[in-house]
Amino acid sequence: MTTFLSGGTGTPKLLAGAESVFDPAETTVVANTGDDVELGGLLVCPDVDTVLFEQGDLLDRELWWGIADDTTETHEELHDIAEAADLDGGPRYLPDEAQTAGRDIARWRRFSGVAEFMEIGDRDRAVHLTRTGLLDEGRSLTEVTRLLADAFDVPVDVVPMSDDPVASIVHTPESDDEYEDEMHFQEFWVAHRGGPEVDHVEFRGADDADAAPAALGAIEEGPVVVGPSNPVTSIGPMLAVEELREALERATVVAVSPFVEDEVFSGPAADLMEGVGFDPSTAGVAEAYPFADAFVLDEADDTDLDRPVVRTDTEMTDDADAERVSRAVADALEVV
Image (tube, rainbow, N blue to C red; front, side, top):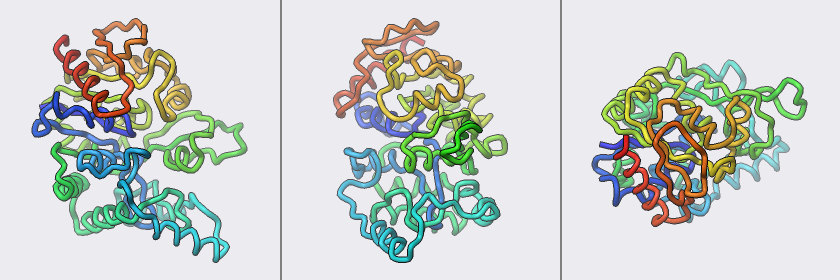
């Protein structure tokens, strides 16, 4: 069996071409849940859903978010109502006392649905309604994720990193008067497009969270592939859960760098890494992943690491690219 750690778009892009290299029936994907939010009472799990939609051939590959050709009538009506009622747009956090009340898995990340700040498609919303309803019936997030995977004929086993709440909270410097001193990652990235300066990132709840048994078991069985996801907010929440971090230290791990030396392929990884004290580069990724036994780097990346390296063109614009990188990952697993 092979286990992939996934967050953001990097690992899902890799998975898009991995099936000819790694048997889907023997593949488990452990998805980040640190950037989940409860929006208008519905639990939205972006990194879980990107894998489900990509593997279920539903994903909008232009955005790498949501369902292809989805409509947004409910989202648009929410904004029309808010404008007509003279209500401010989002993100609108629920009151502090509501952040830890009610459904435990949503704590510290509850937003009002008024003028929702994340665009949710109509079919996508049906997924969140189903997920939240099943959770309210008493199912775990792992059970719900597997039920959704079955519904979409997903060929790999997709499981969340934890059935407990872990919230990625971005803190800004005290000197920054433009933004609040702390915000959920989705506010940082979706609402503010990564604009705020990063002082540090907190994984709230991680100290008390247990690893999902399926996720822990998959890492222990391994080997493990860390895709080219954001090391801070895609992989960082998993490393913040002690059981998962310790399991990775014992496992055979190959990591794909999301950088070419000091140039990141996409997303806010560079700013976040610099903010938490890592050099925003492949060298910084290696420092952030001391448990990794080998790396896959771009052929233009001359970073000298203290671990085995396999090089290829790591840019992934289509499934053929992803298959090439997957073969490099397989080669790296052979040398560790």
